Image (cartoon, rainbow, N blue to C red):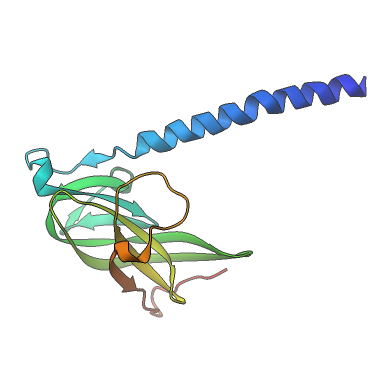
Amino acid sequence: MFGKIKLMVSNIRVVVVPLLALLLTFSMFSCVTGSVWNKEVAADESAKIWFDGFEPTSYNGIDVDKKKFRIITLPAGKADFTGDIAAVYYEGNTKHIARVKDVSISLNFESGEEYWTTVRIYEGRWSIVVYKTKIQVRVGYPSDDRIVTIIPLQRREDTPIKLQ
């Protein structure tokens, strides 16, 4: 009897695990398309940005929906953002968590380029790191020669960075 149960559990794992992996892969690729802020601006005059760990709540003073701003195509040029940081960074077996509200940043995007904006520990401190790189599902970070901007996060008493 126990042999049949073990075989059944094993068969379920063989079917369910690959199915979940396939579903997760499709869901990750579907989120890479993102949304467009202004459809009247030509694609070659826009930049595509993936926000990872930094969740914009406003763009150039206009309130935005965080969910629609995860991956977005914006007109190229200077852009001012205010947003929240919710990031996890693994360093060996240590898990670091950063949560900060109302962080303001200014970025400059070139026409026709793609950017990945992520929050991570860079050179020993929490930073917003912007890479000029193709937006794709990835493991790890692009090489440092792809970095266009590093914004070190300052600790302020009114917006502490919580580490765990």
